[in-house]
Image 1: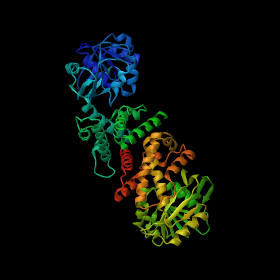
Image 2: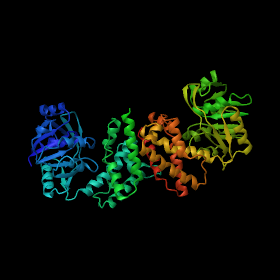
Image 3: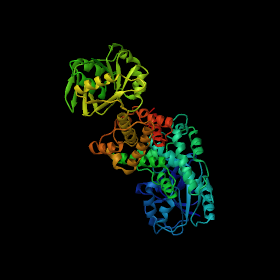
Image 4: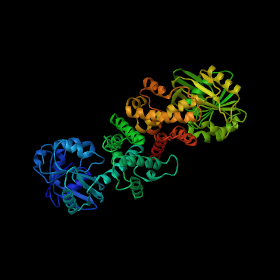
Length: 307
Length: 303
């Protein structure tokens, strides 16, 4: 694996692109021409936990990509369909890895080509500081596993490449337990944050009073766990424990869904809570609280969109 | 007859200005907004909108100035009920006090301070235009009845209803006013927080099918609590929701306006009151509890 294509250079895509450029030939596919030009002219600087400047190739034209061994699609879920469609007919030799929140990103990519697919979730975080700089904040792992018929050996080689680039990664023979833990966690925490405008702070684990937010969070996690059981998934981590642990960290994380709401952008609710609600319908598990949050966040998007 | 209006915001002003039209009623108003009080004392209390009128009354920011009254009308926001009655109760030692507030639980708080209490529910609405001047946006009826644990006398309730009706605020005296109160509270509990959490107007949360379904989910829980407490609703809240979507499509509920202005909401007296009574009665209320907690957390985000 020595040719890598990164689709989407937000914070996560930029972190992959800069690090992998140290151990492979990396080309970044961006939406904006000035973004590609900035990467070509100034390179991509990483600050925070690491400090170096990488020199990946960059283009807005999928026809210029040539071929690659690995393609990481790192756009937000809201841009996934457009990004995947632009890859149609390109990168014939690539394995494609999706890192979107929620469930179903692999199916979106599959609509546009027959590439072997890798499912991934990432727990690392960063902050973009303009087109050619990204701050590396949380140096947590990317977890990856095969999707469909993809051989596990390909997953191991991909994890190895990511680790050699200086990021943390862990291969799984079956990613679904981890993916579902994160799905239930995100479906709960991100939508509650988007509605209350609270960062992921100790409110989310407080169950002291009848009107304490943690009681609702706990019930939302409970609904999610019942769906996982019905779907035959044994969770890797208990989402309630993930929640408690995260609220004990020093500074409260602002979920991207809250950032999206406050910036008046569409959120990833459809691939996160929407995916959980659809799985619940498929398996016949009632999830009235997740349905309520799904309705409220989408209604709030409507209000934000209309000003 | 002397009437003391406690809380002379929009709704309190509608009652005070109307009652002041009657020659046989002396009206006092207690409010903490000094500019509003000063303007009322200087120029009277002016209403415009549905009807135009000016009422002459005495207003004060000092509760100790209130003389002994035959009736009190409490129109403060629910979270201020206890503090307002703490300082004004002396004026109602021989009188009966009627709540015209939103939600459930105000009469209980009033009864901690005075002996004879009237349960009330009112539909007229308005907004403050400037000190001493209130816009009268909606006409509507008021229902009153004795508050069962600390009741006013039936003839007192009748006399208050007759006086308000004569003053231009149509009011019905009922033996049991809980049905009217719960019907309005259920309407408010099922729609106001949905608007407040999303920022959408009433008609918009009804047009969007997922939020309209959530409203029905909230109403169904509330109806089960009402049934467990043997409260008979006087209208179907579902029909009120759809009616309001037709006649007040673009109206943003006061709770939505509170949230936009980062003011504390009345959620404790709506979904909070439903949850507490539901849990006491053993009726599951998960949606109302979630909504209650979400709005409380939203309030915390401003602190």
